[in-house]
Length: 263
Image (cartoon, rainbow, N blue to C red; front, side, top):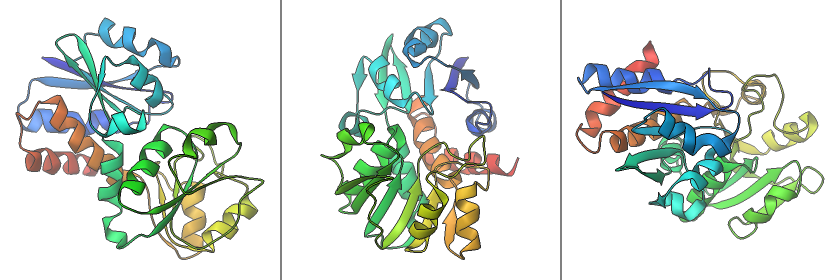
């Protein structure tokens, strides 16, 4: 029996155990998936081995710490320095990033997106912004302060703080902060957010399973919006493929993982 887990702070809200266990149970795969509330990201590696895990997912705020915990980085994670999926490969931790492709899957229905404003400058923002640029999308990043924006200057087209933001037209605005996850906060000051949403066509939040204040405001303005559920599904399917090392069919994984959202 293989054991998998998700690390985060907070982590009690995570649907990942339900998603992955639904796949394992229905496809008779000998594995179980649980949650690990980890406050100190520097202890991720030791905790991983202490629990005897075969693999793990990592959510906020530990995705960059997860990168540092790995022995080897593969695929897109190497480009962005952010890991959300780890595989134990013969005692070595191999890091991947499935967030970005999961998000691209989730916004397909919005059609041709040419420019995006990403709010937040954490690991999820870095992964998504880098992936957007790969597709030739113009990307701006907004963050409360300048500090974390330094590493974005070589990745995206423009970076702004709350004090320097220039309002312009966007096809899509994405919240990657934790604002609204366990509180009723907006990702930036309300008057600023009002102006931003008055100048966009679509809105997406990386947070799932909750109508955050950010999405509620988008709804009140009549904007087409979505939470992070489809992103969660997309990245989950890719992560599960890595967990089972190709032993299960992708379409079967997707089918049962999608069914878990009905539970």
